[in-house]
Figure (cartoon, rainbow, N blue to C red):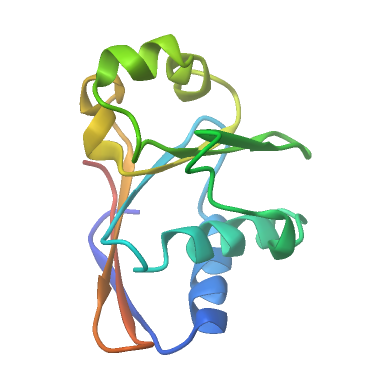
Length: 143
C-alpha cells in the first residue's frame, strides 16, 4: 500500500466487505491501527478482516473489557482495545508488546493510548462518521 486509499461504506455489511478487501493486503507481522470515534465501525472492520481469514464475524467482539482477543487460525489475529489503558506503562504490564512483536496480525483500537509502544511501519485506518450509517474509511500505508 503506497498512498492513502479512501472507501465509503453505507452499511455494516459494506464495512465488513471493506475489512475483507483490506485483509487481502495483510501478512503476519502487520499492525493495523484503527482510529475513530465510538461507534465509527472499528470493530465491524475487524469482523471483516477476521471473515477474510475464515473466522466467523459473530465470533469477533470488542475487547474493551478484556483488552485483547486472540483468534487462532493459520496464524493468529490479535484484536487489542486500548480504550481503558491509562498510559503505555499499563499497556506494557498487560503484555501488549508481546502481541505487537509477535507473528500474527494485530488490530489496535485507540492506538493513541499506546503510541510509545508502536513500532514504525504500522498501517493506519481512520473511520469517520458521514451520516447515521455512512462511514469514510481512510487507509494510510504507515503512520
